[in-house]
Amino acid sequence: MTVLDTNDLPTPPPSDRASLLAWSDEALFEACREGDETPFRVLVDRHARLVRRLALNILGDEHEAEDVAQEAFVSAWRARERWSPEARFTTWLHRIAVNKAIDRYRGRRAIPESQETITRLVDAAPAEPTENQQQTLERRETSRTLRDHLARLPDSQRQALTMFYFEDLDVARIAATLETTEQAVRSLLKRGKQALRSTLQRQKKICDHGTFAFSGAPLGARR
Amino acid sequence: MELSHFQERLSALGADLSQWPVQEADAAVELMAVSDEAVALFAEISGLGLEAQDESALIDAVLDRARRP
Image: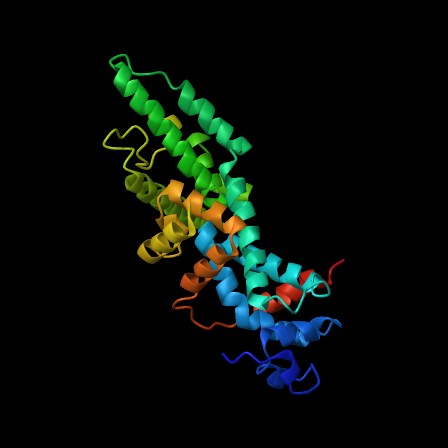
């Protein structure tokens, strides 16, 4: 895409969308300063795909990525009067989007309240009578790994898996709690299990222990 | 994580951090939090193969939220 210098701008009225398509990002954003939404529409249309993808690549969840994209553009709009034309618009916009995605990413690593349930259940599970010390250590390591990876899943998947496997809720109850459909919950469970399994396999920490292999039955039902 | 290592891992693994080993993904995120160069590299790789789509719903949602006080 040819980037025009602000000084080279043609001079159509800013509301003339067709003409605006040729404008540089910086020129369009400058034109937003007076509150004209039309140049901003062109900017969002031009950059939404990459902004959304940046968030998706960090968060791994399409719904969260969509939220981040919205938030990033809203922040950009609200900051339009403070923006300096010396900075490249995309550098600034990508920074906003990445920061918002990083905030969510970091938030996932903090163990939320529902994770405490997992911690309590997993740690409280008695060792088998025949289990030796090494097996106990492996079991604890597997538990830690499981909790770490669960915490990194997208919110919706983590919540669904936690409720299904650790709180023994059925799909209907989970759907009601998450205010979604049963079909959506089944999809979340399926995708969550796949994500968890592939991550655990990649980490090569679960070996063939099998204690926390997600075979389909809630944890409570297996105990 | 150093920028050169980040670039190397981006080339090898792609920009989808869910496909990275967990510790490296965490390190990459922390690097991007402080490095505009890292974000630029990440954006460059993330932008590969993107296809156009209708963004009118997002545009309307953004402007609707932006108009709220």
